[in-house]
Length: 372
Image 1 (cartoon, helix red, strand yellow):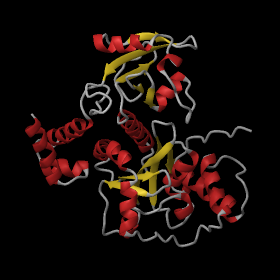
Image 2 (cartoon, rainbow, N blue to C red):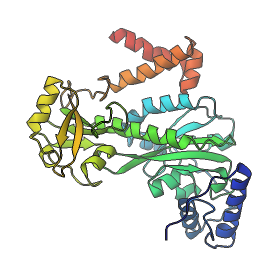
Image 3 (cartoon, rainbow, N blue to C red):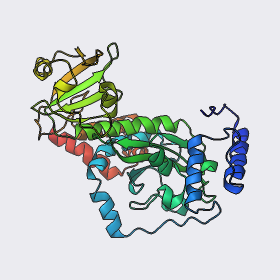
């Protein structure tokens, strides 16, 4: 039976609903008689109960060794590089909310933290550590655990956390999909005893998609195909991205491209000629001629608007942004320069908004001047 959607309610009503749901599910071990909270929250609670957890148990965040920290970083270099400029941008969007960003691997282990973390507050410092395990099996229901278990974006109200200890956190999370269609990690936005910000679910979802696109573009390729439906304007993160090698084999594609082309996650997309009802040479010719978007038929009978672009660096060269033709390091520098401009030249303020040091700002902008 399909569950009914939750109706909009006031904040006091919402708190009362969550408390009633906690009594039903966590104290009386009974299912919800009505949809007091989202089904995925109840599923997470039930998984925690099955693992033998109790809501009033004290949550002990495990210590992290130097070796564990180094392993987490070394095993996720591609994800870290793809996420860096995106996280700097989104922390600027949250600059005055006291939320910070946490990036984890596919198992819920933290690999990056960025934003205004109060290191003097153990409630923030405990979770903002590279190498700490914040999965559902370690700390119960959180946006991190729920996102990785449900593989969907979530917003988690404080009271919807399983443990009483973690009810001080408000968080949004979204999964990050790799070019092979598998989940490679997740992005989390968390605040400690802060105002609830459900709009962060939209921000974290868009940011995760930007990271996915960067991961796709990091794959070696000779030809980049930006896809959208006819009538849609190319140039944002909703574009499908298909990376093609010099022989016409699809080297990587992002989730929107997989959806448009009907490629099942985990399935090899094969050769371009198996997806597009035109010879692959036609796509290379369109890129060389810089024709702009052209409509291309699929074997299904559908048509897509395709913008074909050659990768100037070749299959081993630098990967370029699909829309501005700029390397990712230049996109990162542009974000920093914009922050400085927005702060009217105040480097300290720009660094604070981005969640980085003033030295990093000076170094990035200095490197750009040297390249110029």
